[in-house]
Image (cartoon, rainbow, N blue to C red; front, side, top):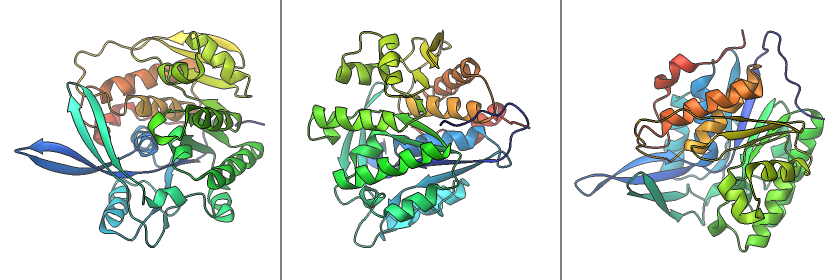
Length: 320
């Protein structure tokens, strides 16, 4: 059973993004650093919020935070941008993860401090996780979501995702393979396959999956993922056309030229958001992919993963 696309007048949907949001430090000027927040699944939730209206979509973020000041600052940040926090669990004795950005040209590298991150416990309580997701129409998670969980918690998470899939929720998964977060390539490969198997929609990046699964082309990547039982697959391939495969029928959708690439952070996450926002509003996959390219193109023309929501007001999608 999969999520049913409704082309008629859209009923309000609940979108839940699951993962780890961290405090972000980056060099600002004169040797000083600026503080922000980021993380792949938060980035996607951010742009889903920017691209949808409150009357159409409720955007929620599911994670765990600590009792430290940065955790409280994160909650205030999310609330100020109308991203729901009532599914965020507070864990005593833990804190918010932290990462430092180093920028070389338009490409970034990252240094992380996340061993005591509260988000690692987001799937510790199976009943709470199941209850939190019981009313979701669309659930989004990534390979990083899986990577931060201990193996027993990861299995709890996957079990609940499987239940939500059977219930009829749309389960969207971006493999977002990060080898440094895994004990081995084999462990990462097995976990990502398990993630694909509970998904109804896959949003992989070709370079990531090619390196791990040795896919010869985006079409081979889509065919492999289709064999896991996923019926809607969008293979991102940088500035090249993305491949859209729905129930075995494939097409490609080209991106638009970007005049100046400033910062590639958040490109894939924002693409995912554009695609998901369009699909939730009833747009066809090819139309959704076109919008996704456009959103990602805007994001990489600015510095930082989280561009101002207001700058996307002309792209807000309504199902009404």
